[in-house]
Each structure stands twice: as structure tokens, then as C-alpha cells.
Amino acid sequence: QVQLVESGGGSVQAGGSLRLSCTASVPPHFMLNYCMAWLRQAQGKEREVVAAISGAGSITYYPDSVKGRFSISRHNAERTMNLDIHSLAPEDTGMYYCAARLPPCTVETMNNADDYEYKGQGTLVTVSS
Image (cartoon, rainbow, N blue to C red; front, side, top):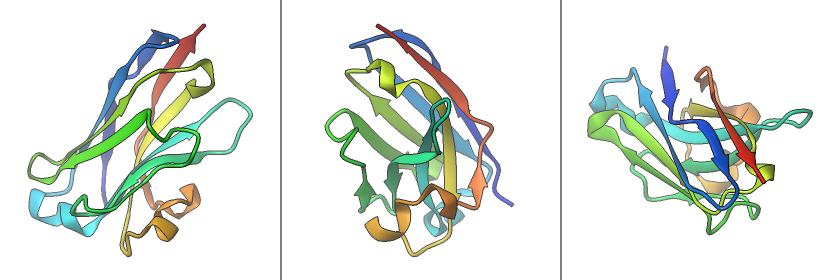
């Protein structure tokens, strides 16, 4: 069982930046075994993948709506994953969840929010205009 804990959410004005962090309960040498992602759920909308990264960090996925503004990174030795968000817009408002799944970790397999077996409790991001 993988436990994930998010931190870093909050209220931000449009145009600002934010860093979200996730810490996993998995021992460092097991971190390579998991694809990881950030999921977002806005009010009244389905949960979506906004960034994903393969076990070694060599493959990343971003939907068009966040490309150039979101950047995902992971530090397996520290059991952590980060999401740096720039140029925040009101439509980025939502609950952000850290998530993990087993391989394969490809662009095609990492872009579906329903395929992530493990999720944290979420951290709320609110962007005001």
C-alpha cells in the first residue's frame, strides 16, 4: 500500500506561482517502480491528469491546457515529487491530488486519471482574478 501526502496548496492571485509537494511512504529504492502524477479536480468537473512522470523521470506528460506553465519533477532518494505552477489562472482552481500507479509509464498510459491506484487526500488551490 502506497500512502501519499500533499502539501503546498493555498490561495493565490492570478499570474502568481505555486509549488505543490508530495511525499510517498515507499522506500527510496522502490520509488522507481511507480509512475507518479498530479491530478486536478475542479468543482463540477471530472478529475484530470495535469502532469505525470515516469519512474526514473525520463518521460513526462502534460495536457495542452498546462504546457509551458506546469513542471513536474521527482526526487526518488527523498521520496518526493513536486509540481511547479506558473502564470496561475482562475481555471487552475481545484483540488490537486498526488497519485501513483504501476508501470508501464508511457505518455499513453499516464494520461488517464482513472488508472492511478494510489491517491493522496488532496490539497486545495484557489486562484483569484
